[in-house]
Amino acid sequence: MRIGVDARSLSGPITGIGRYTLELLNRITLDSEHEWFIYSSLPLLNGNWSNPNVVVRNWNVSNRLLRMGWYQTILPLWVAIDKCDLFWSPASYLPYFLPKSINTVVTIHDLVWKHAPETMRPLSRVLDSWLMPKAVKVSSMIIADSQWTANDLSCEIPEALSKTIVIYLGSSLTKLAATPVDNNTKQSYLLFVGTLEPRKNLPRLFEAYSRISLELQEKFPLKVVGGSGWGDEMEIPDGVEVMGYVTDVELDKLYREATLLLMPSLYEGFGLPIVEAMSRGVPVLTSSISSMPEIAAEAAIYVDPYRVESIMIGLNKILSSPTLRSALSKQGLQRSAMFSWDKAAKQTLKVFESTIQQ
Figure 1 (cartoon, rainbow, N blue to C red):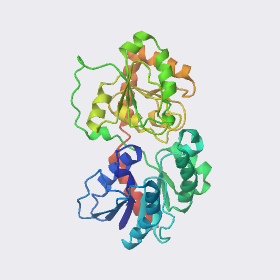
Figure 2 (cartoon, rainbow, N blue to C red):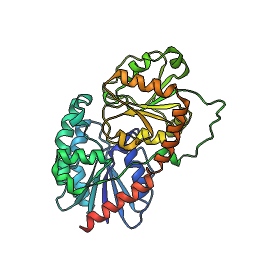
Figure 3 (spheres, rainbow, N blue to C red):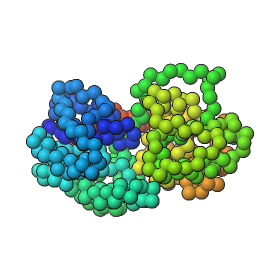
Figure 4 (cartoon, rainbow, N blue to C red):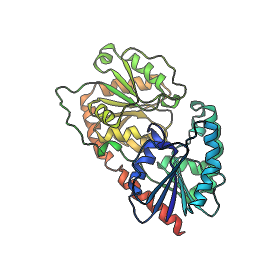
């Protein structure tokens, strides 16, 4: 089987969709029974694609509009020339001019454009609301990151109901050799991980943090980890350190030494930092809406992300109780065992193979 992949997310710093694409491709391209064609409008900056069954095709298009044109014209041409049996888009869209004879699988991570459009860049909001439904309707199969996203998608686009399968993501930290943490020198701090953008709800989090007692603020400073996104201009209160983008090794160390992960997002299709934190035994405070309760289950404290007071109460509750933090840590470790990139890769490859056989 000849499989083409939209790998544009591997041409820059690895964040959400890039992480998803990289973790799965690193595993499924090891399957020697299939040939893989990896496409991007820019040179790939991530991954090792030296296997003989992998072909990388990329241009070097710096202009964003030209890259959009490449995706809709040149990419479908390459897919046709390579005689792909199947094309996989990990990023919610499909090229319009893709040959109709080719089977397609598209991964839908979330429906932010429906639930929180005000948190998106205007152009991204328009593209998502227009191109995602088109891709869903014409795709052979759909992969959703969570049952929440699958149900949400079927309500919005009924054609998705009969061809959507849920495949959970994994934690990239579990593959790292964990350096033992010396509990005598372990730091006490709160951790936020994610792109700095409106959907992550940082202004309300900062306000809630500023309302807890000075004693707690001094004992538990807040570290913010993640690259800058759209609309990330905000006032940073005292006690908050914005660290920017960090490496996987640095992130692993930050998780293992953290007291608590904070993720009061306004909307998530999955919530990868929740799984990462649980895999390192870090308690979680997160939102009571969208997919987050599905992912964290009993291993988190839940808050109303639209109410600063709710976030503040949640912080006070968990920071004032070492016993509660210990219980959540144990529950999180148990819960994290069900999330695995190896499992996700096997399930994804099975979707590809079954799609071809239909």
